[in-house]
Image (cartoon, each protein chain N blue to C red):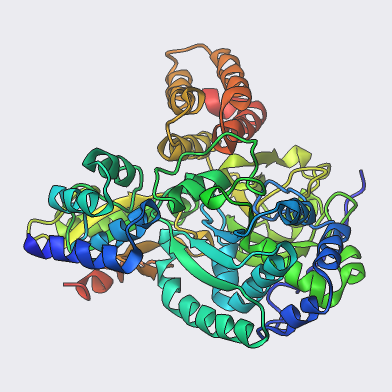
Length: 388
Length: 152
C-alpha cells in the first residue's frame, strides 16, 4: 500500500463557508437526492472513529417514512487524546449547524439536537447565541428546521450513538442492541441521523467546494482530510488538519520530539504503533483509522503505565450492562498487575489477550469490543515492559 | 428543604412532564444544589411520575450527577495519561495541601469538593481542571491556589 505525502489542509477552520446560511442556500438549490448522492459520491466516512459512509446513513434515513425525524450532532467527545470537536464548536460553530441543516433538508427532519458533553458546558452560552441566530436565519430562508442543545453529564459511553439516545430519553446511558440502526429506530424510536461534529462540517464543505475538489484529497478508502488532535511528547501539540492516508513515519517526522517510541492512534480504544512499524502503517481506513486522537510517546514513558491508564479508563467508563466488558476490563487491570509483580508467569499475558478476543466478540458495543485494540498492540509490541 | 421542592417544580415546568426531561431536571438541581439529595430525587420522581429508585438508578449512572454531598464548588482534575505526563500529580498535591483534603473529599466548610475526572478534552494543554463549569488549561502549580481563591 502506498501512503500519501504529508500535507496540511485547511477546510475545517478556514473562514470560507463559515458565513451562516450561504452553504445551506446552496444545498437548497439541489434536490434532497442530489445532496445525498453528492455526499455518497464524495466518499466521506464518519469522523468520530467508526467510519460509516455518511451519505449512506443519510440515504437510509431519507428512505424511512416518518413525520418525525431527527438530526443529531454527536458532540460527546470523550476519547482520551481527542479535543478537536471542542475547537470546531468553539471556532466554526456555524459550519456545524450548516451541516446539520443540510442533512435535515436531505432526509426531511425538522428537529436538530447537539448532544454536548458536560465537560464542555462553558461552550453553552456562546453556542446557544449562535444557534438562536442560525435558527432565525433558517426560518427566513424557509427551511423548517431548528437546532437546540442537550447536555451530557460526564459519561464517556454516551458518545456511543444508541447510549446517547438512551441518555436523551432520560435513561442510563446503556447502549442498545443493533440492529435496528438509528436511521430506522433512533431517538424517540424515530429515524435519526447521528453524525460527529467534524463529519457535519465536512458535509457542508463538500456542498461548498464541490465533490470533485474534496475527492482530490486522500485515498480510495479514506477520502478527504481529517482533523487530528496531537498530544503527548510533541513540541506541536494541538489541532492539525491533514490529508488522510499519510503514514505514521511522516506524522512522527512532523510531530515527534526526535525520540518517539510509539504513537497511540485513535485514543484508548485505538492502536499503539511502535517505532518499527511507523513506515508501514497508514493513518486511514486502509490502515489504522482514528477519530483524531494521536498521542505521541517518547522513550522515557512506561508503556505499562500507559496501558494501565487506558484500562482504568475503560473499567470506569464501562456501562456495566454486559459481562464481558464489565468483568473483562477489571480482570485485565488485575492481570497485568499480577504479571508485573511476578505473581503470575509472563505467558499469562497470552491468556489475557485471549480474554480481550472474547471481549471483542461478546461485548455489546464498541467500548468492550475495542479494548483488545490497545491491549494487544501494546502487549505484543512492548511485552518486555509488561513483564519487567 | 421546601426550596428544593420548589426548584424541582420550576424545572419540571420548564422542561415538561416526560421521561425525556429527566436529565435536564437532574442537571438543573445539581447546578443549584451541587448534588442530588434524597429529597430532590423523591420530588423529581413524584413530579415526573417515576419511581424514586428509577431516578436514583439513572442519576447514579452519570459522574456529573452526584448523589452524595458535594461542596459549593466542584474541582475536577483530569487524570488521563497526557495530563499525567504534563504534571497533574503536582497540581493535585498543591490543592490537597491548600484545601487540606484528599481527592474525592469535601472541605469542612463545604466550599470545595475535589474529584478526579477522565479526559476533559484539553490534552494539548494539560494539566487541566474544571471548577464547576469553568475550565483552566495549562495549569501551573504556582498559580492553581490563586485560581481556587477566586471561588472562596
